[in-house]
Image (cartoon, rainbow, N blue to C red; front, side, top):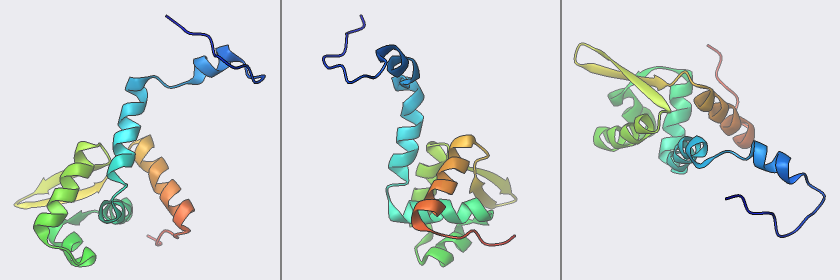
Amino acid sequence: MTQNLPHHHGNSEEKIREHLPNREEITGVAEAMKQLGDPSRLQIFWLLCHCEECVLNIAALMNMTSPAVSHHLRLLKSSGLIVSRREGKEMYYRTADTDLAQTLHRTIETIARITCPEN
């Protein structure tokens, strides 16, 4: 049942309802943003937007332990922001090739005024 808006401010109620994302559509975005709410995960995500790295190198760059980095990587991967591949015994991580991950990358750089490194 659709409820009418209690106040009318000149907006088209139909247009608002038409463009309002449903709960399922917005859940993935909310989960991704929740994961990026942690400064360490945000830095790891930004790093992986620019290169593919293994846990040991990420840990060294972040000045963190490998288990701590692995924990953050699991959360980022479960939210769909990063992907991994195995080469022998080594796991490599990079940003997922999705619109959401790319948009969040650009947003981080815009808000933080960070410049991407040249490849």
